[in-house]
Image 1: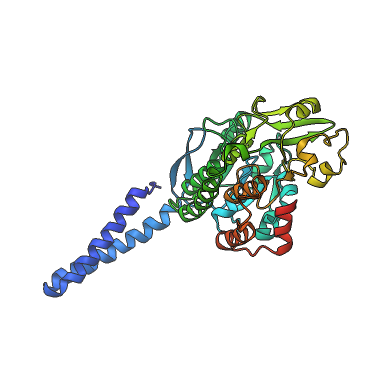
Image 2: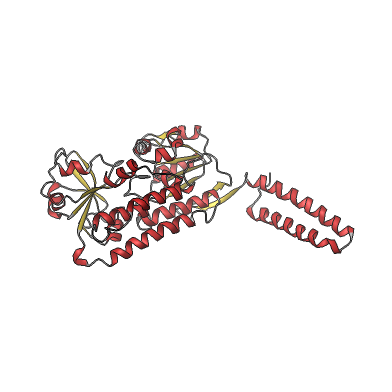
Length: 390
């Protein structure tokens, strides 16, 4: 069957438009002209109908974040997501639902169970697991699901090779380690744009992105007015396991959150998600300690403040002594990684970092309005409390 391109489809549409104009002007012409116009419109209408139907069986080219040109079906109805944590961004793209997903990285299901995402898009809990851990790719199970496309981590070269060999169109999404900076505020917008390309809906998320940019601009304008002398130091504890802390060092998402906040990032001398020692953490002694919340580590603020952490004593830290330990929560996703809540994350970080300057900032109302407008979901008071105080 001859492939119907988008150009030929648009040409058929133009033919119908021209025929319609000719018919409208035919009242002052002869009957033959009107008949010819009518027949032309009829033929062209059939062409458009055929083209539209055939167009859904055609393909279009998408350039993913790895620079790969991928031929993607014009009609995507079965999606598998491998490793890349875009479930919440995917849901935001579809304004509060998660259609077409037939399978995704199995380790994400436990994360979703602790988020409001399970309530907004419960269909995610029904999708089949296809990857049982971050490193295991079960290509046999994926192929049984007969996906139209697979979305994966562009930085995972071994997965990329396996997926390419499957013959299924696979599109890579950038995370940390990509050629562009790991700025979570930019990265989730890049994910949305690539989803527009995949589903053939250019401009679909422009209003959503603009609303988020407006929140970010407001927060950053407030921060600009804060004197340097009033800006604290901060450290992000990315993970903690068996007595070994891991920090969010230079080049990670945490680096860019700290830049947006305008604070002194104590972990800049470390590179990437770096294991360190408690002695080094004591030496850094941040004014604020941010914990990378659920989904990546089980620590809660109360654990650190009460000294209830196996194998570690955080009590001597200035941040602990002043009660300035904050745990990023799970709204749509873990809030330190790219996700569609990113503008809200910056507002939450700023409110905790600069409580005086943001004393009048309507954080709770902003979160509720954002979720209602863009996800079609009414955040309950209990859910809001969990987001703000995890």
